[in-house]
Image (cartoon, rainbow, N blue to C red; front, side, top):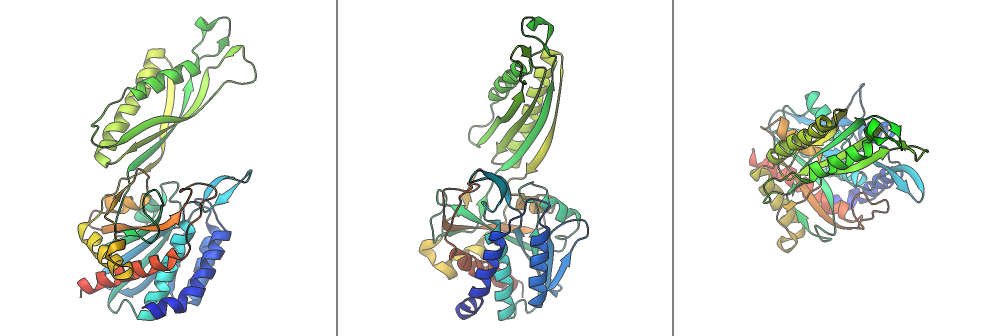
Length: 375
C-alpha cells in the first residue's frame, strides 16, 4: 500500500491545488463537478451526475456489501483580505482530494474484489441541505456502511493524530422579521419599537433552561433595524438565531422553547413576528462497528500512540442526516489532526497538506477492512 500511495501522491497534490484554487459556494459547484467528472472518467471510473443539481457519484462493483464514502464539495462565502469571495476555509478541498485519492489507491489495489463501493461527492454541506438532497435521490438506500472525513483544528486534535468518530452537535438557524409599528420619536406610545421587541426576545431566549449535563445554546446572531433618521421609532427588524444542542433529543426540546419564546413576545406586544428554520443539521449518531473498523485502520496507519478516542465538538455536519433518515446505515466520520490553524472557517485557515495522504490511507484501510468483515 505504501508504494501505491507514493505512486499517486503527485496526482493527489495536483488535484488538491486545483480544487483549492477554484472554490465554489453551495449549490453552485458547477466547475468543481465538471472538473471531478472529467478527471475521474479519464481515470476509468463510472461517474453519475445530475441534471437538477451539482455533485456526482462514483460506483465500483456490484452487489453486497455496499460501502460508501462521502465528501463535501462547497466553499464558504467570506471576506478575505477585504474582498468577499468563495474560500475553502473548512477543508472541503482536502476532503474531496482524499476521496479522489482513496479511489485511485483502491483501484491500484483492486478493491473491491466483491461488493460495491460508492463514493458520494456531495454539494451544499454548508447549507445543511446537500445530504438531504442525496437521500431524496435514493443514493444511499443500498449503502450498508458509510464513512466521511473532516479536518480538525489544533484545538481538538494535534497534528499526526486521528479519531474514528466526530460527535457533532445539532444546529438550527432561524431567520425572521419583526412587524412592529413605526412612530415619531416624540410619540413612542403610538408605535411598537422593533428594537425593544428584539431586546425582549433576547431576554426570553436567555431565560431558557434545559438539562445542564448536555450542552446547548441559543442566541441572536443578527439584528437589523432603523434607518437614516434617528427620530423615527423603527417598526420592522430582521433577525437570525443560532440554536445548538449536543443531541437531537435536546435540540427538539430547545427549538420548541425558542419558538415559544418568540411567539410569546409577539403576543405580549400584539404584533406579528414571522420566522422559519433556514438551515438545520442533525447531531451525530455513529455506529460502534463502523467506529471499530476505523479505529483499526487508524492504528494500522499511524500507530496506536497517535490514536485518539471519538471527539465531541459543538460544530455541525449534515453528514449525520444519512443515519438519522436511514437508520440502517452504519456510519462514522474520521477526525484528522493536521495542524489546522487559526481555526475552521477562519479566512486564513491553513493546515499540513501532507495529512491528506494520511487521510487517504486511513480511509482506504477502513473500506478494505469493511469489505473483509463481510466476505
